[in-house]
Length: 189
View (cartoon, one colour):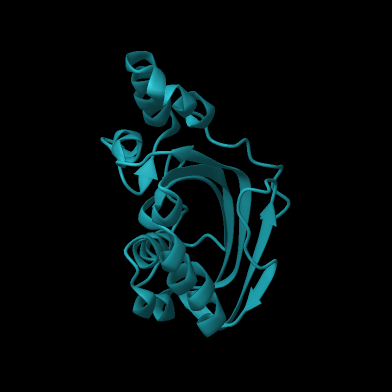
């Protein structure tokens, strides 16, 4: 049986590992995806409707621009098995090969679940998305290395990124991402 936790794990697997066939297990056929973006460094359509369009946006088109992606849920734990809604901070660390850049960003997801468990609505808020020159992908490796995937406790993220920033000036940018985005007040049950 699928649970909100399982759906979120499948989403990361589908997107990060470029497995579009998995989206049928995640989204309802008429699901809605929306974005709010607080940076000019990345863009996505404001609204996407339907399983096929969502799959194209989140997996197929995404994979044409980015690779070696890891998406982390930065929280103390997964949503409960019967949660109708979840709001979870995220951290993403990936590579944009055409520009030889590390892309690192943070924001939050909002998920609305239907029964049987499927995602009916998903909102992605992108608060920050930095592009950092990384020709050999060494910064990418250091930014991902040792982080539990996909569930990452905030204290572990803070400790890991603080230590890496102390060890190398080239990794000082990690301090900007060592704490999750503070979530807005939750207006749903």
